[in-house]
Image (cartoon, rainbow, N blue to C red; front, side, top):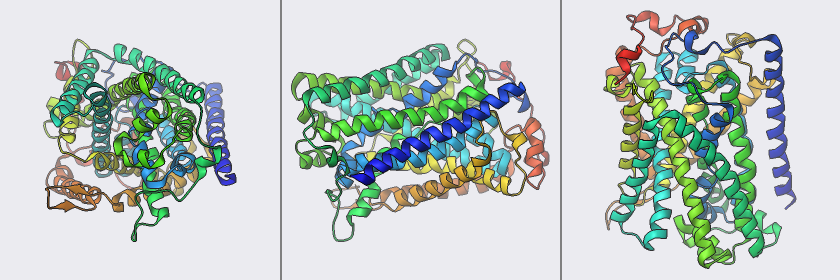
Length: 543
């Protein structure tokens, strides 16, 4: 138990330390009168409506992380792998390292605030080829995140509505949820921003209500139960407990995805160089605290560990029924389902902005279609509908939920790691200097923070690629290590696409004044070797 308490204390120390260091950087830049130059530095015209405040920017990432989604839908998976220790030890362990990743991304968000985010950062630091791959990894990750969130929401909703839903009923609910998210995102950023604000408050209140209810019904276990190792239904002669525990970290790691949404919506955020990076970092920090309190209380309320582990995707439902039972338990589960709906809404906002930014630079097939901006609502309408359609396709196959969530973690964190790696390389060569930093800066801590983040990303990528993931293709054939095989196939397809199309035809993003930084990396800006492309105007991209 002492190690668990120390781990939680370390989580809080890291959380506060990084935040205080960044706050000093922001304060110093305010004193120097540094201002946000907007998109002019990149050479883009401001097309998306810049109307988001700081809380709205935070709210979108906080809603996508959604401890009432990721920590809930994979609760049974995590518990079956590592038992209660996954909650008491695994959650704070993952949180500590994700804070380093979030801090590194927040620094880049402050330095280069555009809706392309990771794609633009990687292009500046590594060139158009690095940018192209990072954009694709990010899009694949975000599409599968939308699929994981909304399919999980559909699973909870259909179970509450139909008891034991058929595949047709499940897919119908799934389609309706995606349709609602597409429509609302199409209507406009103001409405979605208000809903994101409601979502953030709803999540905080919802977690509070859940914790209070569990306290009222009374925990069944001693606090030491949270840190109890050894329980697992996934161990066998080839899978020891320690490895099953590591695989179970997927629960927390998948929860912490999509917080780059605050960077993707920076073009729509006022004072983006300060508010957007705080949105990235605080969404992880706040989720870390509230998420731990929630899953700790749920775990301490379990009466039959075997039943929770055996329930799979319904593990959280079983745990709540054990703790509360009856009507009140169903009310709590509906509250959680609504939180998942909010989470999916924010995720669609994020992926649509990424698709818009990448297609604006010709990075996608049929880019002229996907970069259209609605003249009436000033939202990337076609990108919104494309993201929801692709997410629906991800949910058609059976028994692939763990595959989809694992693939989203691998793809997203690879895209997160690429600009961090390139920045460390640039710092080591003296190319990236303090003058290139934005107001939200870690100063002398930056390199160490980025190195820790890169090592963690490498670890979780390898872990989830090699982790056991079996899918029954037919009644007689089971595909083993499906996550690794699917990711390998995706990577091969990307290599082929790059060789046949992107290597010669993709020009990369407009670098604007950042072309000087690109040149400092030791070679000419990629765009200099290609014919100049006209910057899209409102009349060319609006419907």
